[in-house]
Amino acid sequence: MVQAEREHWKTRAGFIAAAAGSAIGLGNIWRFPYIAGRYGGGAFVLVYILLLIFVGYPVMNSELLLGRKTQKNPVGAFKMLAPGKPWVIVGFMGVLAGFIILSYYSVVAGWALSYILKSGTYMAAGSDIGNIFVISISSTFGGIFWHTLFMLLTIGIVYGGIEKGIERWSKILMPVLLILLIILVIRSVTLPGAAEGLAFYLKPDFSKFSGEGFLAALGQVFFTLSLGMGCMITYGSYLKKNEDLPLNAKYVVGADTLVALLAGFVIFPAVFAFGLEPTTGPGLTFITLPAVFLQMGLAGHVFGSIFFILLTIAALTSAISLLEVVAAYFIDENKWNRKKATIVMGIAIWFLGIFPSLGYSTLSTVKVIGGRDILDSFDFFANNILLPLGGLLIAIFIGWFWGTDKALEEANQGANTKLSTSYSFLIKYVVPIAVFIVFLNSIGILR
Ligand code: TRP
Image (cartoon, rainbow, N blue to C red; front, side, top):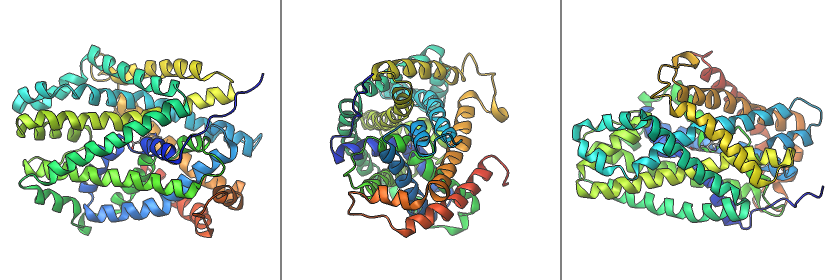
């Protein structure tokens, strides 16, 4: 059988939009601001930025160069570079992580999607606003409906392929995301009373920063940059050989960081201006922020809808990267065509997602890992186990098995921004040690 030639990103801007689109997601818009506030604001941000540079950037380069070198999905990449060796398991872990993460990511993204048109409902609820969220997620039909709709959007884009699907849509959606975000930043920082929120967010308070904050920062670096499961191996496999790979990696890390920081400028001033608590996780996004919009009166309908469109777009460009990893594996290794791979795997992931989606209604009594509900259990298994383990093994593979000299050769080909021996040092020593500590912590050995 003659194999169709591998598709490639058409333009540098297209690649950057797609890869930044993968990185920028729910992790930037609700998770980053919340943990930043919790671990000492500016102090956390400072440490986070250092970790982005010394851990995130080298690992980003590592994944991209493995992909470009092999022109393959994560499983194919390890098969090619270490034939007959167990390293291929790292690739399989990545595909599995993509499958699991997308199944529940789509459920949460479905909540965001449903909130675009819900401003009337939550604003009418007044002080009962928290209940609206509970009612939304515990609706059997609603949960499945929005999850299904979001998966259809994701499948539809990935079905179109690299250039005509992922690249084209990312180039449209990412600028829209940036514009919406800037509108919200302007509204938020000009609210009366915003200064208190800005101080909470930005004033470095080292007394609130701890070892735990350090670990949270490192975990966040991996999740927010889509590292540890071969997502960037897959996106790197569509990079042309003459692209400046380290420069592209810089842009992606930079864009992701910019959006996370800006999200903080939306959330904290607004939350403080209206005297609310910067509470955790989904609550901040789906309960606290709607309470902010409620207090804005009529304008709140507009800003509320803008916010949830923003959140849906961010989630969508991340979701397509997750589906692409799974699809690329079946396309490369099992010789499926793209249509079959996206539809069959999209449906399989959709089906798995029904379980976390019912976890707050029909299946609310089901507790899986350590008393967690289904969605939290999926999240724990993927983010606390598969991702750090994957990141650790990718760094060890390059640093100690395949060799940093070969890695440098691949990354620097066609590049003006060259990686140097500092990359080798970071990937051999700093990254494995740092990630190993995070991993021990996340599975509960370091407490
Ligand atoms: N980075 C995305 C976010 O911040 C989520 C994501 C997409 C992801 N692809 C990934 C996380 C791969 C880890 C691995 O929401």
